[in-house]
Amino acid sequence: MNLRNYTLKIWRQKDKFSPSYLDTIQVKDISPDMSLLEMLDVVNNHLITINKEPIAFESDCREGICGACSIVINGIPHGKERGTTACQLHMRHFEDGETITLEPWRAEAFIPIKDLVVDRTAFDRIQQAGGYISVNTGSAPDAHSMLIHKNAADEAFDAAACIGCGACVAACKNASAMLFVGAKISQLAHLPQGDPERKRRTNAMVMQMEKEGFGSCSNTLECEAVCPKEISTKVIAELNWEFIRSINN
Image (cartoon, rainbow, N blue to C red):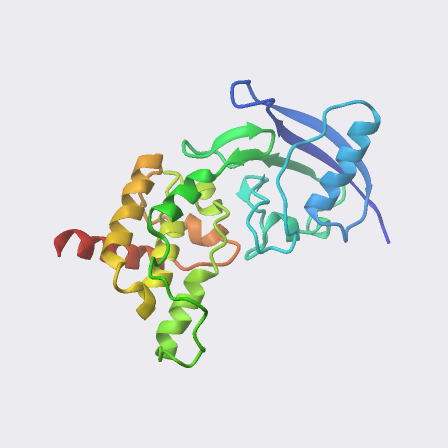
């Protein structure tokens, strides 16, 4: 196996009140089979041994399903590989000797915490505003007890794939969260369980999105291009339709 060397330019920021800068770090003898986050683990181990501050970054599952690994890699949220999170991006996708720039999500609603970590709880507040059904159903019903058309189930399942990572916001020139909100609203709008509260839900989530300071959609489709779960911008059209219904009826 041929080990590789890289030059990292990493966004460093002590806290949200401190100025940021790009720190240059030389990295040597990296296996191409490592993921980007495994490479950062190696870098941090080295920084600790030489009494330097390790790089703060987020991760949890490292399996591409939690959305915590929010890093802009060479100007692209989650990197250049489509349908891939940062934790699933392997170093074999970078050339030996390449310079790799790592930055956090940057948007008015995503407050920087430290280095590559940002506060994405604005998404949680949008979800809490209405992304649920409030009926007390007791134990889970049998799968076949409520008939749902396959097309509707497929549409709901596709929207439910959203992991709420925020790449759509990071890629959008307006820092719009409409792909995320559209996915959450579309998921429940296609199912009979979500129908009774669909108008209240849509209105509440859109109002919270506006309150958090996210921008409007201008249909450049950057959000769809960088979404690690490849959510279609069709959910934005569905969001607009649901919102019109919520205010006109």
